[in-house]
Image (cartoon, rainbow, N blue to C red; front, top):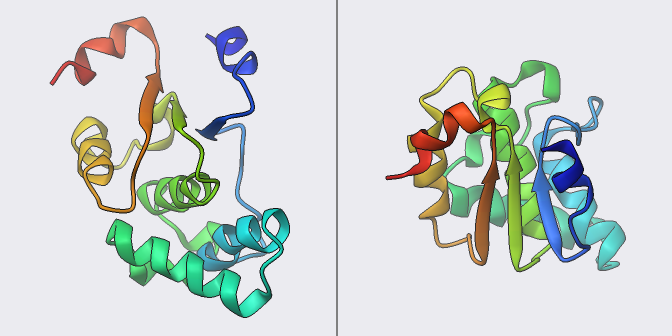
Length: 136
């Protein structure tokens, strides 16, 4: 599984334990890094885009939380919002159960995937024994 994920093309956005948040930044600031550094927007516009993404995902309330203050689900939403800001056609979620141990994660992921902010193809890489969780 790790080899398959490492071999993913550049057109893929990833949500993974291996891609941590910056601990000294808020959720909003972690997300705003994408438009700030990849699309060269100014700080105010980057923050506005990040807040819009959190709003669209239904988690505006986590904007000011830092990594240490987040629940696993809030941390996942922050990572997901950061990945969505990349606006890539494919999104890969690597072992969601390892990140979302505080919520029933297949339903949580399905709810997030149904939000208007989400587009493109989602793929979940997980252990073979968990694949039955995603058949719905």
